[in-house]
Amino acid sequence: MPGPTLDPTGTDQTLPKKADVVVIGGGIIGVSTALFLAERGVDVVLCEKGALGGEQSSRNWGWVRVMGRDRREIPLAIEAQKIWDGLDARVGGNTGFCRSGILYIAETERDLANQARWLKLAQAHGVDTRPIGADETLSLMPGATRRYKGALYTPSDARAEPQKAVPAIASGARKAGASIVTGCAVRGIEKSAGRISAVITEKGQIETSAVVLAGGAWSRLFCKGLDIRLPQLKVRNTVLRTGPITGGPDGAGATSTYAYRKRLDGGYTIANGGINQHALVPDSFSFFRDFQAAKKAEGEAVQVGLSARSWQELFEISAVPLDRPGAFEKHRILDPKPDSKSALMALKAAADVMPALRNAEVEQVWAGLIDVTPDAVPVISKHDDMPGLVIATGFSGHGFGIGPGAGHLAADLVTGNTPIVDPTPFRFSRFSDGTPLEIAPPV
Image (cartoon, rainbow, N blue to C red; front, side, top):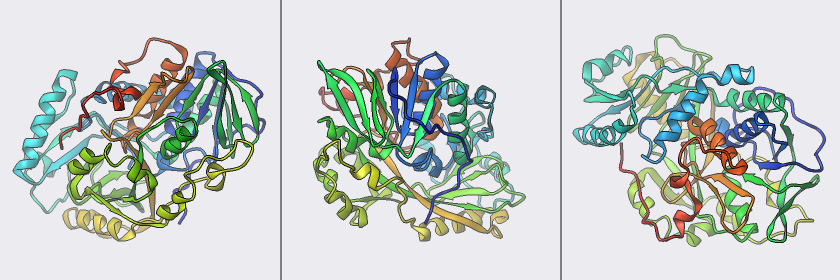
């Protein structure tokens, strides 16, 4: 089943022979990185093996939030929202960004206690998140037939359109001077005297001394070709969208059985964050110890089993010479089969509470593969053993909203500019330098 349809955007037909920086990956992190580099006068080329935003960057829920984030992400999420505020004017496009508020809806006393713990931790950052009672929760869910315990509410949290954002940002990056080439897989990196000297693509070589790897779910495989151990796995989540309806809530919210987000077209994006699948693949065993704590924390939210990916990746774990096509060219866009049953169950659960959704027509169901790290916090970091390489990946389902901020930080790291936030929490070396693994508590 094909993924969502993205807004059309122009790309470049000719692959430049050299560049100051090559960005690998055309999701929201990659195009945002290209935008900030181009605005600084850096000669940047972005290579995308498939279509811009074709994978998780267009398949996510469309939330732009600070609320509920790991404490390490909060400063970057705040900076990202500031960028979102002026992004449409900056790129001359429409991302669908709107500060319409987000609710974390409490069904139990335990939910309320978890939310209170997070709020205590986050208040040092000046967030406008506040606990609200049952009556105010009902007022933000028009027509709701269930009285919840309350909610954690952040009025400044926002929504945007995943199918519009990447094309708009990419267009802005090209206007600023970036070259963006699609249908162009990067096979690997060449080094000279211990430093990056070129990237090898299916369309030829680009001389460069700096690379930003923003490959999403593909980053682990690419790093493996560089003899870099990146502990990253993939998790599938399924989403549906409805046709336009009237009378529903204006913002976004989530319970244990459904999440909703109003769309720019008047419909809703519906999903369930508690139903995800991880297909057992060779990396599942390679990173078994790395992810033990995460699996325990997630509990039943991630189901593990065999799928077509299990067998596919079994035959794609070996390195391929750079003069031959490999997995990056064989699989242009990850388009996993959705779990339609779980998505329809989420819609029913939402409609049981909000009558406005009961007559909503399902227009599309899709799935995406989320790149996850052992602590569910991204890597946005230089790599000590490969000067010139910056890795920006492992956003663990949080990447869309934080994307412009992450792109800014990646651009800062590759150019040596003062970082927009302290990059230490996102360092690659935290997985190998003896730092105890920190798993954020539930919210």
